[in-house]
Length: 215
Image (tube, rainbow, N blue to C red; front, side, top):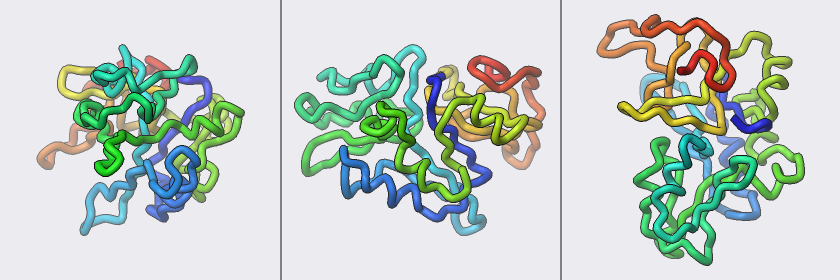
């Protein structure tokens, strides 16, 4: 995991969309938000979840791996950049490859756009726009030690399973310590399948740092 990164805490999200509005102010895609604010059980629950680019890093970001034009670059500190406007051909390979459904294609411009962790800010030590305006801390920017200093005992996951594939990410998600101690299926904690409680399945005692309790 990157030293300083975004930690997503779904339990704190109130669906206010402040992050969505702030993302529109990012200079690299001004006027367009790269955050997906999902309502996980719309019509039945107010539960919401902000989805930003997870900046996959194991073995390499799927979007960058499938780009035929080498338009998606990964910085030395693990930030997966949005497509280089001089190289992107708008083929949408990255859209289909991303397991989290993050990249967007501007059909008119024939250009891929996605969260790049506000690299114009984070490269200089500033927090991403979304994290600076989140009123509840559902989007936290910092190190794991800083997160745990503020929220003692918190557990995080940076490893997610999609079928037989395990994807390691640079952005982490806060998970219930008493529910999930194994790779998080499909990017969300699964606690029930067809009415059957599976929250205690595959227990794995351990911490919540990189590789701890998620392998």
